[in-house]
Image (tube, rainbow, N blue to C red):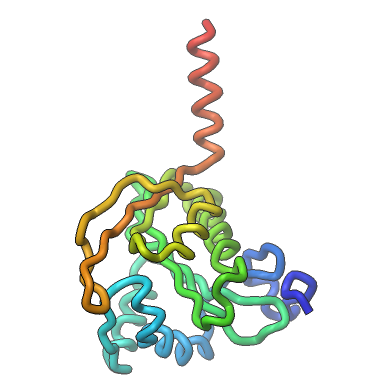
Length: 201
């Protein structure tokens, strides 16, 4: 059965931002084990950065520091009809003055990649950024060769703003890094309307 046709459990549903069978919500106790595994996934890490193993003590310290940092928020990605998390999406470097943040995402299983789950999760994270954090801009960095991720980001409204030549050394090769960003569509629309009104006077 399609994920979109299934339902979230009554206990879980109130804690999620949802769209078409994909939801994002808080980290739960049972999520720490898969999160540890995903952070140490050699194949998945190649799409983002150089791989380096993380031991459990370091992971525990990172997680404690992360949850105590008000400039970062993590959402676990959940699918309707499945009790376990499918991945995570993070908003980090949240700047209330500049109203900006950086976005990162990981889909845990290869079987869940390329199904539109990441696109839906990113859209939900952006909805949180615009409606709840009052941000104006969200940006990210992605390896040039990660075409699947770039396509998902573009589908969610991100645009390529620049290229950083040989910015990463991954799996034995130098790689270019792309900066992508998107702006709050509500404020951009209001700004365009105000500008046009001013010009027409």
